[in-house]
Structures are given as C-alpha cells and as structure tokens.
Length: 149
Length: 118
Image (tube, rainbow over the protein chains, first blue to last red):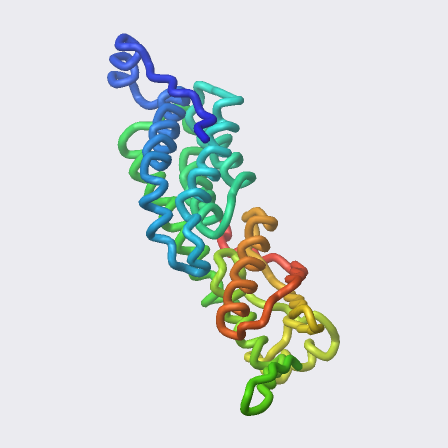
C-alpha cells in the first residue's frame, strides 16, 4: 500500500531547514508528512463517508490522490518552492479519484497558484496560500449556484 | 417505461420520474455545473422550461436501464474523475430509490465552464 519512502532529514538538515525559509525540499517533506498522516487516519476518514455514495472510500480516494501528487513531486524534485507546489498540484489533479479526490486536487491547485513564482515560502505567504486555496475551493463548490444554465 | 409485477398489480415507473433522480444525483457531484440539452427536442424543452427534463435520456430493457447524461463540467478538473464519480453516484441513487438495476451510464460532456477569472 505504501508506495512512498520516508525520507526523514538528518539532525543537521533538520536544524538547517528550521532556521531558513521553506524551500522546495522543505515543502516536499511537508507534503510527505501530510500523506503519511492521512494514510494513518485513512480508515477514520473512510468511516466518515456518507455522501453522495456511502461506499466508504473517501479516505482511500484522498490517499490515492495525495500519493499521485507526491509521486510526481518526488520524481521532479526542485529547490524552488513554487515549482514544487505546482508539480505536486499537477500530480494530484491527474491522479484525482472520486469526489473527495477532485476536491482535494482543487485545494492543491489553489495552494500552488498562490506560491507561483516564489522560490521560498515564509509564514505570511503560507497563510496567503492557505487562504487562496480555501477561496478557490468555495468558488468552485458554489459555481453551480451562480451558473446561468 | 419500466414495469414490475407485484401480487396486487403492476407498478409502472415512467422515465420522467427516473430523470428526476438522475438529475439530482448528477448535480450533487463536485465539478458538475449543469446539464445540457442532448438533442433538438431537448433544446426546445430547455428554451421554454429551465427546470425541464433536458439532458437525460433513458432506455430500458429486461436487464435494466441505460442512462445517458449530457453534462457541462467545471474547467480545470480532470474530466475522467468527475464523470466517474457522476456515473457512480447516478447508478447508486437510481438503484437505491427505484430498485431497478442500471446496466450502463453514458456521459457526454457537452461543454465546460471557467468559473474563476484569474
């Protein structure tokens, strides 16, 4: 099931990563941490699934989507945070499975759009990126209500 | 028209009733903007009635239903993922509420819509 490698940084690397703004290599560690955490709680998320088809695969779909994103990011590692986020978002989009996966891929799309062109990420930009992804998601969710069809 | 025999008589379910369920299930899926008319007759229906039963056609045989849906989807999503979840959702809801097996769900993507301008 686990197709990702756990690439924990060494003590010295961790110290360096903590002291400096987030670059591409730090970002991919965060993506991996997110994937590991989601995989750990996969069954819990599966149990939440009731809508629209209660077949209990929400967690599995989300994990598969994240795995696709991580695999793509892992194959094209870069020091540039914006590029890294973009690669991850592209992988997640291509590997999106089910409703939850599609929604998750949109979250990453919004996130990567906010990071575009930034080589490093600081706290302020991270906050902005998180806010951007929420806005994009809500925009897409309610697009239908405003649609002139 | 689909009919089922029961001890007290026959139950007929008309396509219009099934279309309501299909429409609801399709629109619930993320990334679906709306339905699109699939032929000239359905275009006329849409012109006069926005809430009409355009965009969905249903064929039935002894094995079950074949449902065809014409969709407009959100630009920027993977179409295969969206249509897969629409098909799954439609099959599930029709089988649950109507009790009739669904043999095929055909999805035609008639258009896309860009909702975020930037």
